[in-house]
Image (cartoon, rainbow, N blue to C red; front, side, top):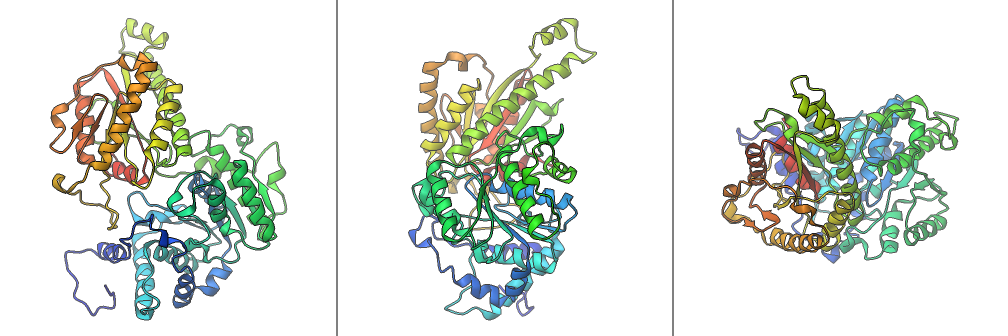
Length: 539
């Protein structure tokens, strides 16, 4: 597709949809687990940078580059928010997007507007199309997006560009950066092993690929196997690698982090180290905030407290349900998809769901219309409503559910939470098309074999858990089984639905049929799933 005006355009297709069609054409059909992905002619990126005349602009950018298995997006978000609150013009590139591809490019904390996105998109697209050849074809999807980020940040003359690595580090498209101000490695764990390696040492080696000679770097406390590799790689390049301690909450002066979960203290600690070093190395400040043990600058505190990131420890009441109270159906969304992050997600959900239930109980107790008997019950911690927890799950087939679902169930069980039912669905999003709204396929076209595999594992785990703990039988409610349409599969503790909208409708119907029950739905396993759910429950 060209944008030079030589081809007729469908008048019914919006300019934005036209750009999404073009972008979709760059998505490779090859499996991400294909071993030939390694490197994948990384040198081509430098050709693309030349074609787009971005060599000098990238050299001039004051970049913070962050890799990691989990927490790198949160660390980047905290970093951007801190420096924006310090008065700097910020650019933030993250992945993946949940609903709209423009989420990946943020200027001063806001998604790039459609007008600017389209202008920069076609500028890059047309120049690449004019210059490509058989030897240098069009860049693949993520590479194009990374190049677009560099173009946007250069044209908008940002003071600082914060780049989140897409996958790995060494061969990631963001690694065309040769002189960042500071680098960061967030928590490492087992993910993308089909590409990065099967050991923490191998994974750490790939992530350390973003280290640059004599450029300071920070990491967080890591498993010894990973830390030793990071130190070795840093030593070879003369990199001063330091460990950023988790943030002590007392330094927030009574404020709360903008991103929920105890694990965010680790990510906030890394962000503080990155920002402090960036400020020092760019000549903006002479104080080393890393050594402050009693307080943080007001700008740092405000940045940490106001940071926001969709799909990570996010709580959203269903805004479309016909109910007297929005709290009757609340979704807890977290895109955890590695074993370690699954356990962190479970702990967050248990704490958050209990806090919400207790908070609602207090609200009901203060209700002047409530009977004295109801208020007396609430004084003893018993709400007029029961709470039940539902799991809504999917993960990509390259992940091992044997490493994910047991960690999730065990962590929840240890914290006293037992899911009444697990729902398994295919993602609405399709991986070969980009757009603000993905059209769900018809039931006949949906292959549910993966979801049935997940269900079989869940049923097995649930039987084991029930053998240890009978509390799962405490609460019963009428489930709308008639809404499970052709193609689904209903078991004792779980259901496979042929589409996400059908699953959401089933949950809403269950809420309507059970007025005395409040539903708390954990959505996890895939950021794609989280994005699809957000489309259906947010106005």
